[in-house]
Image 1 (cartoon, protein in one colour):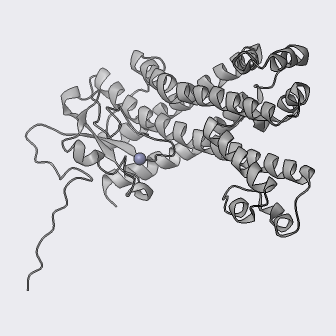
Image 2: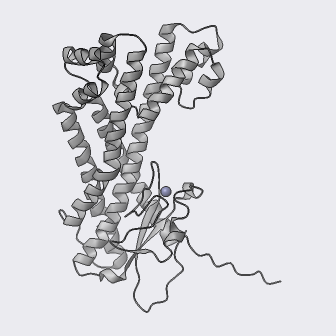
Image 3: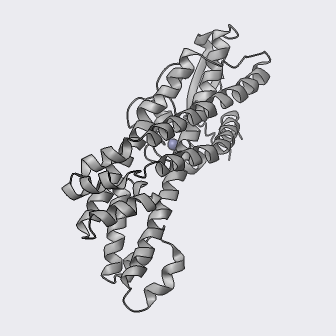
Length: 335
Ligand SMILES: [Zn+2]
């Protein structure tokens, strides 16, 4: 294992420890998207103004609080890892790097997540809710029933627009008796598979199966959120500990280089795979990596990306080892 791979494993393990808290905070956020006042909701549903319904659901104090809590879960996770990574760095550099408790760059790192990944998650949730409500209304079950469903079933508000569409097509497959389609869904609740082999499904059965499928999609989405946010926190924390070392005068910034290390299980990922080659000389501590999806400060570049950034000291005048993930020296076999 190369030093870069060892460091990646360490970062991925540290990230894995952050996942449960992030997942719980995300589910709490979804849980907060339950309307508290039914009459107002029903009135808006009756008018068919889906955007107003979504605004009402997002406009509660509970949602604001849960969103803030989710933000601080990320920030706290990062801060905890900055301490761990500063200890790691102290050991490897044989000097003491104090973890910053509050620094402008730390705030910037949190904001990078808020402005990009987190903002997208909030947007996806809004769009998903819009899609779900529109689909529920066109099913002809009536505004009151839609309102009650939104209040009682948390998973209704937890889908992205894409998820909402595949839930919809799953429902259609069940209604039309397309068994093969239904059985082809990896995230279906397999406990219902036996019912699929029998005769036409009863409407209550379809309801149950759709709800179970939706819950699975929401759980999967929460996993993805936690996994992606955790690896970002870990990568940012890692760079932040180096920034602290520079700020404390332990190393000059000019000697710090960051490299993109593609995750072992992502070697074939079209987005991640070319990144080391696009940045063959690494980037400065505060530089950005060129990626197929635009410049990025650090991994992840897509949901579930497990890539890491490896930071190392490169003293001027010292011959460097080949950059990780870019060059591999293949020596001809002697005959
Ligand atoms: Zn990746």
